[in-house]
Image (tube, rainbow, N blue to C red):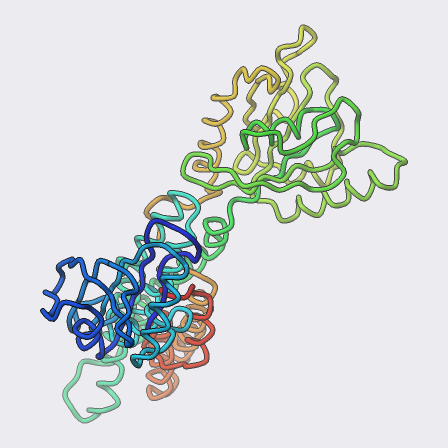
Amino acid sequence: MVALSTPAGESALAVVRISGPACERLALECFTQSQPLKTRVAHLREYKSLGDKLLDKCVALFFPGESTYTGEPMLELSLHGSPLIVQLVMEDLLKRGCRMAEAGEFTRTAFLNGKLDLSQAEAVIDLIHARSERALHAAHRQLSGALGSRMQEYTNRLLRIQAEIEAYIDFPEEDLPTEDSQGPLRLLKDLRLNISQLIDTQHYASLLHEGVKAVIVGAPNAGKSSLLNALVGQDRVIVSDIPGTTRDVVTERVVVGDVVLQLMDTAGLHESDDSIEQMGMQKTLQRLEAADLYLIVLDSAEPSPTLPPEVMARFTPDNSLVIENKCDLVTSADMAAVLPELRHVRLSLKDQTGFDTLKDALVETLSSGRVVPEPDELIVSARHATALGRAVEAIDATRVLLRDEGPAELVASELRLAVEAFGEVVGKIDNEAMLDQLFANFCIGK
């Protein structure tokens, strides 16, 4: 299989990768020089087509055997980044017996050849799509096999319990100690707690991949749009003294510390007879329901606004930050008495006074409020959580059987189902349809 592994279009270089048993033959046939390529050594070679036409002078690398990413021989060509050169070389390789790789086929081959488990293969796409250092760190940790190691630990714990129970099934006449269900029950309770805690990290996955949904909320003219512009670093939203300028939700991504925020500037909440403004405020309320973080902007030169009770009920010290804007005005007043249980930051978005303090407060709120996971926390995806949920169901069924002194054969059967669920996480259970769907999200050439 062959694929362009760099983005299409003009560039300084374009990398073409070939994987499969024919790579050694191609490493001899494609170049004018007759000497074979030394393994893992870069060679400057002239690439000639089957018609003996010079297509490019490129750098060629040959990787033998099972020590490659895919577990197969690989040939890598660094061509000049002309789309025409890439097209001609790819067409020539297809004539020589190669075929175009499908999306994610290189990583899928690595998984099928035992170079990666399925959780590591999924981490490859997370690594490519990472938009923040925290997401990058989480992907690297999973790629290193952390989740696979955790599944192996859980599997070993279950297998020890299963072996003890099955001993009484297989050797009923042996002189074994009296069977005690309380020991396995305690072990299963501890294991279930560990699995449940791991399942609970699922909601962090979308926060790392898509960004923390941070809704900017407040009364009209408090400075909500100015806050978004300041955090983004450009005039993304129109700022005006006229109330009701923002009537739709405007979304921008920005990196704060090592986390991506999905900032949402919303329509100001206030009494209005304007049907368009009312529609904008309704959208604001909808976005508030799905928010992870609330940035409450107050105009410190005006009386405290009255926000809807259903909005106020969502604010907690763990998910909210109050921003007292316009502190540069002589009429500005301290508003610590407004939402006193929340952290406050005073600043002027007009002259950027206190803006660094705001960034520090955002980072602290995200970390201390557990809006984002700890840097070394293991995070599972929706697929992992579904499989782990089946393991929990099997463990619960096992505990019921043990408490009711049910048949040991049924206990052993439920434990095997739990072990199989752990196997699904790392791909030890063969499911072709699931693999097709998973690797379809990869890019060509990876």
